Amino acid sequence: MPKYILKRMLISAVLLFFVAFIIYALMRCLPTSYIETIARQKSQQPGSKSYEEWMTQLTVSYGMDKGILAGYFQWLGNAVHGNFGDSWFYTVPVTQKFSQTVGVSFIMGAISLVLELLIAIPLGIIAATKQYSRTDYLISIVALAGISLPTFFFASLLKLLFAVKLKWFDLYGLIGRNYEQLSSFGKLMDKANHLVLPIVTLVVISIGSLMRYTRTNMLEVLNADYIRTARAKGLDEKKVIYKHAFRNTLIPLVTMVGGSLPGLFAGALITETLYGINGIGYTSYNAMVAGDIPFSMFYLVFMAMLTLVGNLISDILYAVVDPRVRIA
Image (cartoon, rainbow, N blue to C red):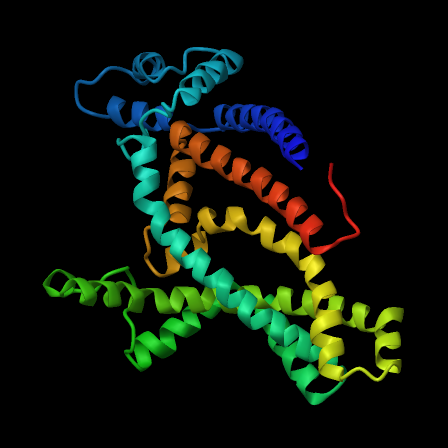
């Protein structure tokens, strides 16, 4: 096991090197850039230098006068020492802006993932054990609705019903108007209240695919020979389902759980935008649109690293839950 993990870590480091280079090259090849935007704004000021002069000056000051390869190795050298530079768009250190915004996105993602697993897996199992019944059809309709509903449409419906009509929640933001006047516990509850609708949105639009996936896997396991043998021996149906079938149904789900690690930190761009939450998804989107290379590089490389770590965790968990798999 330790040798396997070390080998995978070395392979992941090589992959991360090339992925980071591709990201950097794409950022440098964008049709527009933050430097061009600033140069255009400064050149339009009365008595200012020309656009070309500002471009030359800003290109040197932002370190963009080097080629893509040289610029990448300069960024990589600084990144290895923990220096990711300052965000051009937000004018603060990249790590500072990231730490300020990733917390709320992580909380939303973690709670949504836990609720998704607690809701989707049991419903998928129930639908499989009651195949072609009314319960199965009802669960399938809910799953298909969750898969089909666009995020912006469902979020707008929730806001219309619970924020506009019933006035149970605020339309936008993470804190209320009287936030500063509340106690510590009151502030915590105020933030929790503002996260209810975004979390409900994330859960509903994500449980559909997991429910269908669980149902399909459970049906495949229930038709296996060893399940028929267990039933033929007279074992209780609940024991057959929850001890024998359920454990084998979880094996393919482990890969999905491990692959969900990047999603905990990636943020939810559409949901955060619709609810006015300044999370990492909305923050990174603005940085990319503005051509903020330092912040975009840090965010995208961080996501790539989490993806590689998630794949490694999935492989290890797969070997843990499935005794037929051995890793050396």
